[in-house]
Length: 113
Image: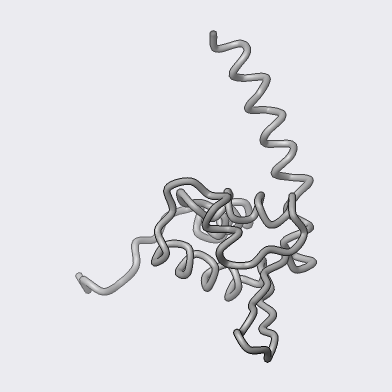
């Protein structure tokens, strides 16, 4: 067996599983939600908004979200340099689904008590 071969299962071709893997993880959803609420954010604003995130995790998560086409990074050629993050159209398209998940979580939470 090849140790470098990725694990495969029946859900690998499922679009829902693919989407959840893109936004899953501890920090991606809070980043997406913070940017959604504020429309455009700078790095230090995000750092202050998301309690407990390290610089390394924020940078890595932003790069991943940018590579997935969820977050846009705009750099302004100023002194000092300024960078702003916003949601792309793909990122904005996630919001109704995230709101639906949040509503479902609220309902489940109330029934779980």
